[in-house]
Image 1: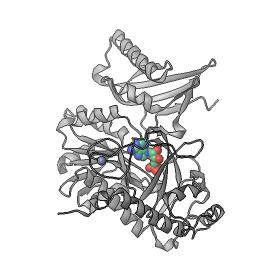
Image 2: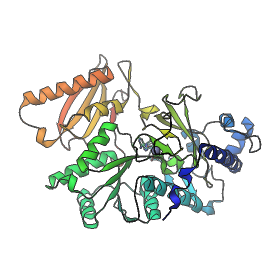
Image 3: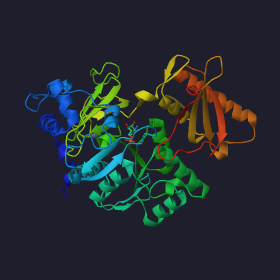
Image 4: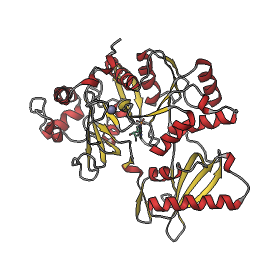
Length: 433
Ligand code: AMP
Ligand code: ZN
């Protein structure tokens, strides 16, 4: 059966760009019906009529997270509240939340985009899909759930945690596809081992892994642990949630569904576009959302457009995996370091277990970078000399990558507390002083 989910995937560049122009006009018109954008767009002199080519995008002012906070809860609605059927929040932990509201049609679009992602990597209605991520306000729950149902999969809304039950459900229903956060995936693997089972015998053949940054080294580890394929899934609540960018079978960059979102990559300092291949901040516009359109949203996520065509044939542009958030950069002894540089190094050591934590302190003389690393039980032996050697090896490898010598601390499994929801990788104790 020809499926509807790959229709927009076969569009040519020209068709994608023509559609973007048309949808930009509609979005500008729609956005202008709320006070906030009416003023913003009027000040910038942007109207649907004078938006003629994609070069005009740059005339539209950026929208920031602060703007979304200032207009909380319903200041950006462009339909009567009675037309809204669902709201979600982004996972920020402090301050006024950011809430995004959807009409029934918005939910429909979102479900289709998510189904398109899953279809692209070979998920079919015969699959059993288990959503191992939190539900509630987090978009990785219902967002992916609706996509899986749209495809016709038997969908198990397992939620996050309760790993034993998670494993039982997967074994009883023969789960073939799962959505799982990187920080939780290794925990499931470890639990299986504890139960005397080889994760390779687990029925999973595909995992959608996203919502937080992870490295290629992490992906490799996960794929070999479970003998499955791992595909990167990117999204953010402000752009609905998952279903914005997704890897194809090539596993080389994430296709952005440009018929629904307009992506740009800009220099985070100047806001000017950077050339393809150069890292910058991702900026996104919703092109199809009715209830609450958002124009040129500064995501703070750092990535780059991958130059060239994807061998899969899709013409939708690809972005690199998220390399970090502009806010994540740590300055340690004057050197800029991203947490993912540290993960990239430590995940190459087979002794390293499922969790790690970066702690920044000031010892009165200067910055101290501590990296706490959980070691798998079978390697956590009593011979201190062997552990010390491993500690030095990890410290050297890290120094080569980040140019700062860290204090590496090897700790037992389960000694680093797990975050609820998205992982907390950095604790900056310097700020509290
Ligand atoms: P939220 O809206 O709370 O779900 O958070 C969205 C944020 O999660 C994004 O802006 C990214 O910083 C992060 N995120 C989502 N998916 C990924 C991914 N595949 N890789 C890295 N970071 C991601
Ligand atoms: Zn591709």
